[in-house]
Image 1: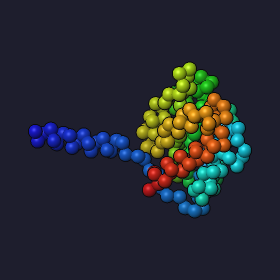
Image 2: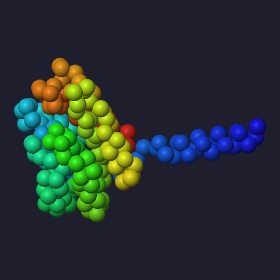
Image 3: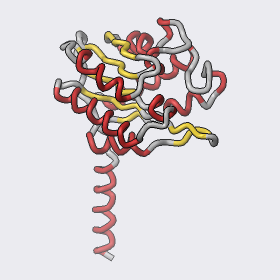
Length: 201
């Protein structure tokens, strides 16, 4: 009986360690946030001041650089990132890529490799990373992609999971099949801000 109790205690400790959320260092007032992604970051189908980076800047009090580029794949983003990371004020990157890779039927392994390389680039500059997952779009709706959880665990970075699927599954929050409307982008910014408050040390 004592052996069983000890075994259960060890299992609970191991589970709590494995499920502990990764955290990031606090930002100073002068620090910038790089919002890096595709059309979802850019704010496609909304006015410029309705994109999530603009709203997140208001919520957080930090400068948020909108580095979203519509129609871009992770391969395109990988080529664009080094120049952006030359800005020494950036201390956090919100990485939100994958939708165009998925829709174009590109390799999931290449997507994972590209995302991991982006994360390594940021870490080499001392920049924290928050990864945001993109769902797999199929005839049956949206399903999660395991690669985002794999990356978050392998790279020991925080992950915001399921946000996009939650938003674009509601007709009142989207402008087309894959993009939010202004209200949807606002909720996106709020969810990201709530996540940042959870994970900042």
